[in-house]
Image (cartoon, rainbow, N blue to C red; front, side, top):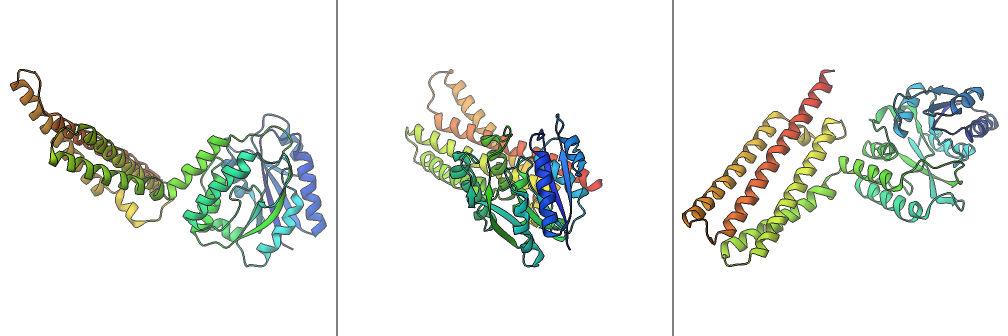
Length: 374
């Protein structure tokens, strides 16, 4: 029979861990399965002692975090099929028996529980999570990575050992839940879903709705910054550039239009740079396998970025000095050169942005080189 490893991350789960382990062992015995339970504990209460007394193997992550607990658990797991489950009794361990056949069949590499397709007991999931947060984050993940699932953040899931070795899992926090699905979808793993029942948590919740939601969204932005930053930034930059150029060429007194164009131009350019930073960081961190990203963080690309930034800055300074000299020639009185001054400001800001962008990418280059050297 297959050997199962069940990993349970815990942080002050003394009220529930005993029952959770007993129910899991009963499920294994019922199905005649040989299994092990690994508790990755970061508690300040008696959770670890209780888990050990129930026959679980207890390990202690060096750092707090949902992902850190699982990453250590993976190192200790010896099963052919590895299951993940919270220790607060929100999931019934016997549900593992309904999910295991998907992996045993060889047709799937990863099996996910789906609370949204199953049953959610009243009081188990806040309305904000059930109807807003989880559906939106899952929809975004599916649109970007074609995962084809309904509940991306379900804490009950299983994976084959061979499939686990194919994933580059590194996140230490709650975004680990998204990372696992994103990595699986990006690497072509076959994903199945099984409807499950979700029960009310016993004890205090450790979730922070907005902080955790942002962490998941930020992680997806690292993988796919285009829809979030690059595309909107390019649109804003082009609109701002067209508006600013048209107003400047036509002249007149439409300063408000030039200010709006300059604002769009600066915002769009900053969003483009931010998108490049996200992609460069993703490449340095091993999230992106694009050859274009490797070129982006190379020395020659950095050198060009610095030269462009210096050229923009120099142009802005020259135009600004011309305006200053004309103002001096007018005895520092009234001077109709507001448009030139605005152009000088825009060029100077763009130049400074480009230079600091190059400096940031150089730091990523140093980090990446240091990691490769290790």
